[in-house]
Length: 256
Image 1 (tube, rainbow, N blue to C red):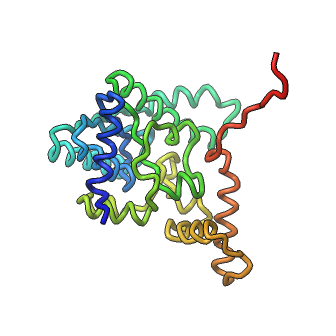
Image 2 (cartoon, one colour; image 1 turned 90 degrees about the vertical axis):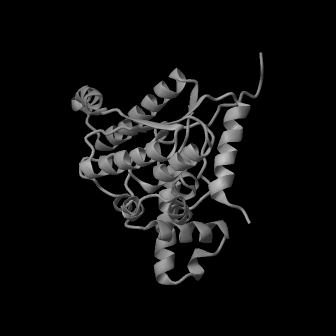
Image 3 (cartoon, rainbow, N blue to C red; image 1 turned 30 degrees about the vertical axis):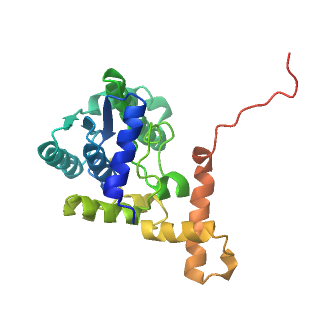
């Protein structure tokens, strides 16, 4: 039987060595996905840099991320971390767009600013950016920022559902406080959680709907509650499908 606590770190290590990568760079938010990915990277034996990048972040979220990084730093000689507060940089950027204010666009800009920071560190040290997205977010509902947290080099847990990530976190010894924390993308001043942005659907709801959709089950054959949830799932998926498909490219019919 496959042991993900060994298989994924080995996969990460093999990729890094094959491509002559010197360092793994991971953004740590205080959530379960980044906690699991950063631990898997540390287990690979490759130099692992964890970055905590608050932007007007709730203190408790930042503290969870820092506490996790401290634990990794203590357990693994190859793991290090930095806290880079991007609030001032973001607020200067935000000030430029007071005439065309869009809360959603600015929320996504936070994710893109973090992506730039991760790549600045990675490229400086011959490293790569390791993604923290799970299967439901990356391939189900597209719950990520295009060229933000979606901008990565490898994705170790993108074939795992959120439920599987939680289980893997327990297996890896991730703190119970992180496991119990409500998932949030940390992009909003009001601290809204993922369910607030996903029609009130939990990750277990999304996983169930994703499974129904992938099996090709007729939505109309479902009970009312499942039917409603699957339709909500499909609505979110349709809205974000552009993130999960290749960029459209115009194809010429004739060549000079």
